[in-house]
Image 1 (cartoon, helix red, strand yellow):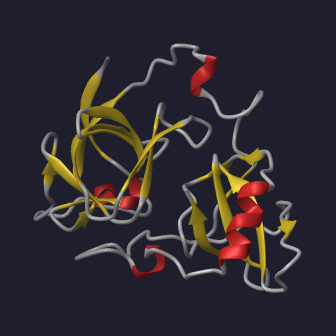
Image 2 (tube, rainbow, N blue to C red):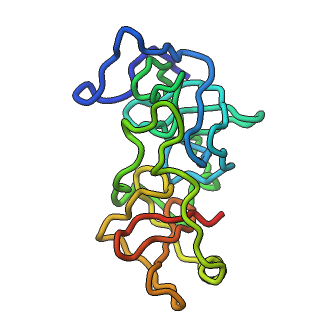
Length: 211
């Protein structure tokens, strides 16, 4: 595996300040309940879900994709970097070890049947807002009626692959199909990147992730 030191993020949007933390090695903090996946992308199978404020070992990142390899409780996997901080700074604003991922070609690591590249991107999220604690937009999510949860669990749908991670507060693109919940005029649902999510039909924002 090739490693080098780099600043994660685009030059147009991000810069390395004199006081930025050095994250070549050490720990990072998860800012919301976050999936750890078998590879660096939303199409990879979920290994585990890390709870908000979990500390992880930061092994390195792929700047072009925005994914970082981490180790937590003895397991090593990949997480989406906008939901990581180092010394209360977003990972995108610190220096990290750059790693290259070699795809082993394991079909069991890929979601669904023939899931490929993302067809769109989740809208919104914590970029620039996760300094000093957990972003409010990525909190636990609002409570929904138990009958809604039961319905979506009992009526699974095929996953849609979208860039990013499904967390409360991010929005589903308008051109992505959602599914009705018969007992609710407020909520719809779908499967995003392997997670069933309940969505506010008027705003298309994720209100809770059903795990």
